[in-house]
Image (tube, rainbow, N blue to C red; front, side, top):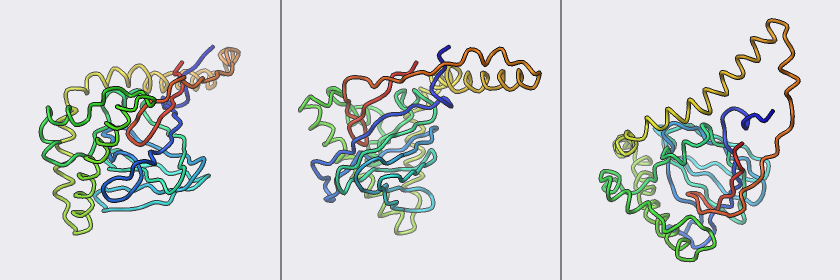
Length: 239
């Protein structure tokens, strides 16, 4: 019997963008936030840092092999590489980021205009082998860094209104997607919780027949690398 990946989560390999540097001289990914999904990094190679902005302010967390760090919805973040930073990304609510749970931290005037946001966030393709798309991803990242740096300046000045405006704008952009999110949650996260409850109930009754369905599942990587927000992603097939 094949079961879903544990906990309704999804795992991907990530190689953080290392070229070209953004306008602030930093090599890294496209700043963004998730609205309902927690994200985790499990660092496997290289060094760098995770830069974050929350209501608590700006923070920088060092990343090196063996480091595990995770962050809740609402964390505006970017992964920064000091050299060959690679990691596994573990995302809660498998499928939701692809369904629009992630919002790029463009300047507030872009976030306030849904059409402008769609234009700014679109790529010709997500094929990491396509040079035109790679350049477009770098340009998208640079514009998002402008918004991130504005948020950082406001946070370091103790001014929280820009972050609150960003939250409100992000929520408006995503409100129309929430019905689809509910369907995904029902199919994956809640279905997994119900499966676990059935197992618990069976054990409570002394029933072990269900344990005979156990078998290993191999999650093959998808062949092509794709352009993500933080870097080049290679996902694992969901079964």
